[in-house]
Structure formats: C-alpha cells, structure tokens
Length: 500
Image 1 (cartoon, rainbow, N blue to C red):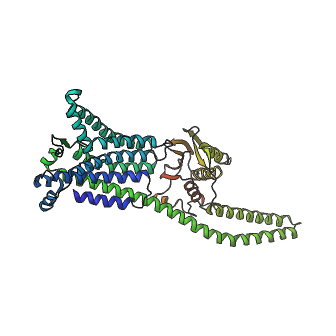
Image 2 (cartoon, rainbow, N blue to C red):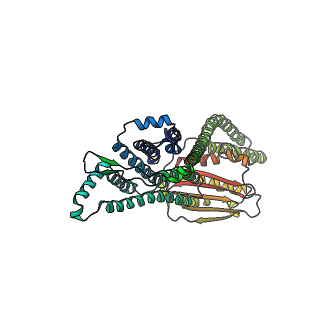
Image 3 (spheres, rainbow, N blue to C red):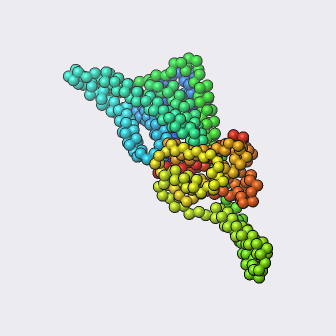
C-alpha cells in the first residue's frame, strides 16, 4: 500500500510538473498530498499503540522488521494528530476545489465566492480538531460543567455529526458537479473525454479514502486531571477489510484504474496537441512553399497579360482573335486572383476581436451563397438568442462560408440535399454546428482534412486550403473545431468558441 502511494505520488508529479499552475493543477496536487499526509500520519500514529504486526500487515503489507523499527521511533503524537486531520481536510477541500475549478473554468462568476467560504470552513475545522484547542475546551467544560449545565460529550457529538455530514456533502457535491458538467456538455467531444477521465481518476481514490477514514477528522486526545498527561485515542479500523483481507485487492484495482485513466487522459491530450502542432507546421510549411511558388507564377501571369494586351491592340480589327485574347486575359486574371486568395489564407492573419452575436457570421455567410447553392434545403436552428463571443466578424464569416460551401458541394450527388445549421450555447462555449446529409468523409481521410492542399474534389478551382484556413482562424479565437462523419450518412462540423 505504501509503495503504491509513493508510486502514485511520483507518477502524478511527473504528469503535472510542466502544467500551468492554475487552480485545477494546484487542487489536484492538494488531493495527492492530502492523501499521502493522511496515510503516513495515520501509520505513524498507530505505531504509538504498538498494534500487532500481523493485523497491520493485512492493511499496509509491511515487513515485520520495518514495523518494529517504526514502533520504536519516538514520534510526537500531537504533531501526528495535527497532520492526520490536516491531510484528511486537505484531501476533501482540494477534492471539491478541483471539481469547482474544472467545471467553472470558463465561468464569468468570480470563483472567490466559492473559495473564501470553503477556506473559512477548512480553517474552522482544522482549529476545532487541533489537540491544543481540544484540551482547552475539555478543561473548560470539565471545570464548569455543573455550573453551566453544558456537557462536553453532548456538544462535541453534535459538532462531529455536523462536520461528518459536511465531509460527505463535499464528496457528493464534487461528483454531482462533475456528472452535471458531463451531461451538460456531452455533445462536446473533448469536454466529454476530459470529464470522464477525471471521474475515473477521482472515484477510486475517493472509495479508498472513505473506507480508511470514514471516521475522520476526529478528536483523538482526552485531557486528564494531570495537565502534562493526556490520553491518546486509538482510531477505529475497518473490521471488514481486516477480516476478509480485501483492502490490498481493492487498492490494486483502484490504483490500476487511476493509472489507466491518467494514461488515457495524457495520451488524448498529447494526441490533440500533436495534431494541432502538425496542422500548424503543415500550414507554415505550405505558406513558405506558396510564397516561392506564387512569386514565380505571378511574374509569368503578368507577362502573359502584358503580351495579351499588346496583341489585343495589334489585332483590334480581328474579332475572333480578340475573343480568344480576351479569354486568355480573363483566365490570367482569374488565376492571379486564385493564387492571391490561396496565399492570403496561409499567411499570418490579423485578428480583430469584438463582442459579436453568434448568429451574425452565419447569416453573413449564407448571404454570400450563389443562387445555385440556394437550391439546397438549408435549415437554421437558433437555440442561442443573444449570446456573444469575441470574434473577428470578417474571418469567422469566411470560416462559416467555407464549411457551408464544402457541405453543399459534397452533396452534389445527393437527391434530397439537407443542410442543418444549429447555433446554441454549451455551458460557457458558443457552438455553431453545420451538418449535411452527403456521402461523408472516408475514415482514411479524417486525419488529413485540415492539411493544406488536401482535397477530394476534382474541381480545378479548388486548392484545398479552405479547411486549413478554418482551423487556423478558429484556434486563433481560442476555440476548437471538431469533425464527425459517417460514410453515406453525412458530416458534421462543430465550431466551439468561448462565450464573451
């Protein structure tokens, strides 16, 4: 058990070492240190009672020599009681702070309204269970019990019940927040994954903690008539765990579940970061290639246009020749414009953010559609009324237009063309979903759709930079873009933007 705890500590520190020191990370570290402080202080405190090794070995799997050495150490019982109660309270409050910070990471409500009352409750309980304060309270009650009519045992029993209810309420509230957050954001893929992994990590360690410390925090000291002499109380131990010797098995299963969940969480995070970095690298590489390519092509196009204008002047009386030269001139102009457009979408983009309602870029994008595109049945569902995000209206309109245009073109062979655009709020995210009933995207192409110059279309006017541009714009808005597709059923693009 001890080795498992040490392994879990090292593993967690390794995972969180390079993470930003926000409240989520701090509370996670608080959970782990609260757990370990509780375990070790409980271990050393029990050694003061010289608990028989065979009983203790069932719980912690210690060697007899190690246990005898711990028993012979002269640990300060008062310090151990303080550490035990501190570790247990730190675990519980870090546990609740983690769920609040995680589920309200983008909340507009000041989290100090949550943190300050919890900090006060933490300090009050820590002070109440401190041995020094308990000895003072006991001496006071025993001195004035008959005069005041107050009974120490009756008063402290009531306080203990209140604090025990508070402890279990914190655990219930923690999981309620996470489950509610999961249900509310179930359709957002990355939030659903992270929330499930967090629940998988926290649930096993909570079960173990409750099984071991269901009685804690507790008053573990009693005053006597001699001021310098105190009675130290032996904490209760779970008889079922000892009788059937199942604690080690439960611990192994719980820690295995936590390690698995942590590993999956890190794998998913790493995968998302690698994919985003890979797309950005491809865009930057493509941008350099396009610059060199367009510089050369533009010069040739300008030369062709110049020669075309010269020939138009020379053969101005020949109608057939003028017609052909005009086609060449327009083709050069069109090619020049296409090259500029492709190049501009891969270059550095200036984003000017302003609070804009979510439906505005969608409506502006729909206005840009041609009459041919209007033949598709387009349904706009506005579940969000008035929600705003910090947007660059021009660029976000272009993002919506590109995705809508791609969806319409993908449905060119679909008989009943249906495009559904849904605008809604998902917790603190604004969501624009664009869903078609086209042929879908083959699984082998899903990882390539945001790559520059990748396209499944045969049109000579398509350069395959539209979705790369969309990815770049959405991530520049601190947002995310998700794609879900089923072959022969359709494709759904989901743009997630932080609400203002």
